[in-house]
Length: 196
Ligand SMILES: [Fe+2]
Image: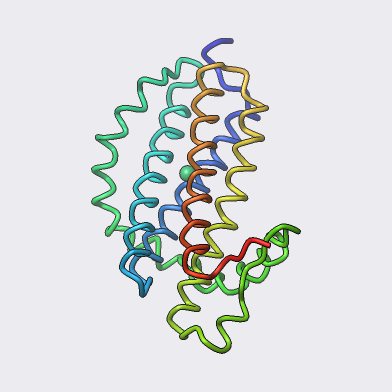
């Protein structure tokens, strides 16, 4: 019993793994598209962290209830795969990912419509350059993605019956919230996200 993941746990973990994979692909793709080098650097850094999450989820799936948090350290080895990130050309070709950005951005406009804050889209029309507006769309998309992924981890935490796995998922969820914060800070300091 201790060693086995339930079918539900396994399904949730498989979903999370797909989300992590998508995050890696999107951050890498956006890093190469960002006009601001500082933003490119931020996206690359976050891509590396998502790659570690992917490895951790993979290990949980392989180890089941035997998963030990220490195993996450091995992620270092797997990060080496990160180098192989370039090999993801194949994945990017799936990457209608990029095409859907515009529409996702729109959806997320709704999701993000929190009372206390506002994405400053007006800026794009007048002062902001087309390049800045493209960076802004990518940031907006990733903020929305992080928000979604964080909530998916919430479900994973609640559904996990193994303390070690639960802790690992909590840790990753915290990371995702941290990513959201870093994206917010960038947007805020560049006049793209005004707190009201
Ligand atoms: Fe992640």
